[in-house]
Image 1 (cartoon, helix red, strand yellow):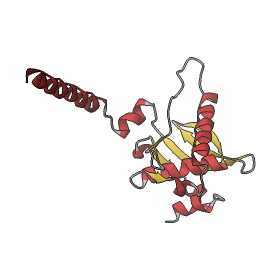
Image 2 (cartoon, rainbow, N blue to C red):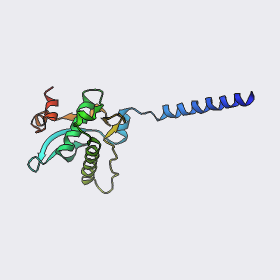
Image 3 (tube, helix red, strand yellow):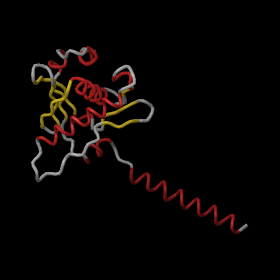
Image 4 (tube, one colour):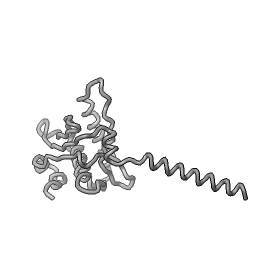
Length: 167
C-alpha cells in the first residue's frame, strides 16, 4: 500500500514539474520573431535580371528570390498577415513537392542575408516557416512586421500571387 502511494506521489510531482517546464518554455510568435531579430519584412516584388529574381527586404536587407521561392514566401507572409497564418500545402502549390521548395526558399533567404552581413555580426538565424505536421505551414513572424508593395504584386506573373492582392 505504501509503495502504491509513493508511486502516485512520484508521478504527480513529475507531471507538475513537466507542466511548469512547458509553461515556462511557451513563447508567443512575437517573442519568437524578436528572438530571431526580425523587425521588418517587406514583400516588394521588384525584379532583378529582367524578371529572373524578385525582391524581398528582411530588416531592410535586400534579398532576391527565384520566382517559386518568392511565390512561397509571399503566400506565407500574406496568410500570416491576413488570417490565422496557417497555409495548406495545396494553397502553396498543388502537388507533392512543397517541402522541397520550402527548403530551397529558406536556403535562398539564408544565403541572401549572409551576403549583406558584416563579418563581425552574428548571422540572422530564422527558420522562416514552421510546419504543423499536417501539411500546413506558417511564417514565423509577428504579423505587424510584414508589409507588401501591392502595386508590384499585382503585376507579378503568377496568378496565385497577384490574385492575393485583388481579393
